[in-house]
Each structure stands twice: as C-alpha cells, then as structure tokens.
Amino acid sequence: MIGFLCPTQAEYSALSERLGALQPGTPGPFPATSGSLEGQAAVVCRCGIGGASAAAAAQWMLDTGEIAFLLVCGAAGSLVPELKIGDIVIGQEFLPADCGIWSAEGFC
Image 1 (cartoon, rainbow, N blue to C red):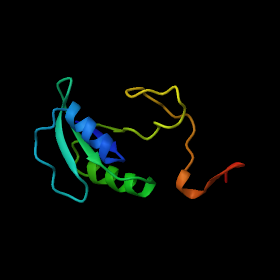
Image 2: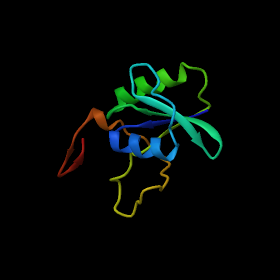
Image 3: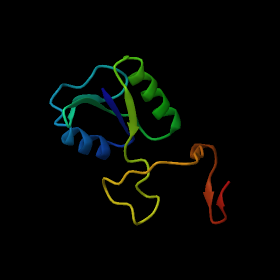
Image 4: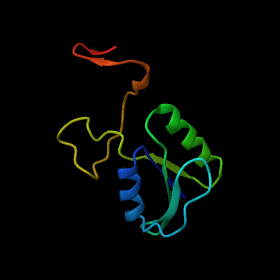
C-alpha cells in the first residue's frame, strides 16, 4: 500500500478526491482515508504542519504494517515560482526548518 502524508487540509482534500477515497476515515489520531491510485491501494493522512507532526503521523501509518512506500505531498509548493501542482521534488539535502528562523539575512 502507498501512504501519503499531507500537511494541510487543502492537500489532503485534493489527494483524497484524486484517490477516489470512498472508504470512511480510518480511526486514529490523524484524519486518514483510503482509496486507490492506478490500481494500487493507497491511504492519505492529514498530518499537520511541522516535523514533529509529520514524524508522528508517519510512525502511526507505518505501525499498521501495510505501508510499502510513504510520500509527503505538498511540502515544497512555495520553493520556487516555477513549481506547478503535480511536480515532484526530490531533496538532496534536508534542513530541519523548525529548528531556526528565516530573516532578511537568510536562515539561521
């Protein structure tokens, strides 16, 4: 099964619709629903914003034992203006953004 983490309600709703998520929400600490994508079973979970929320939701999903792949959707939409809905971004470096602040001088 493919698992999708969506930080916001807008991302969660859009992906749930795309998956044809007709199954009732999964009971648990995070809103989640299941459907299919190209014939592959999938579940989408609204994890909330921030690394701690994403980590907790990811662990909750992985604990089911049914998730083979876990993808985060919608987390890079404001990186550069050239990105469009549906583009895929694969990071080469990861910076825990919740461990600092952005200022006129950059990230510190």
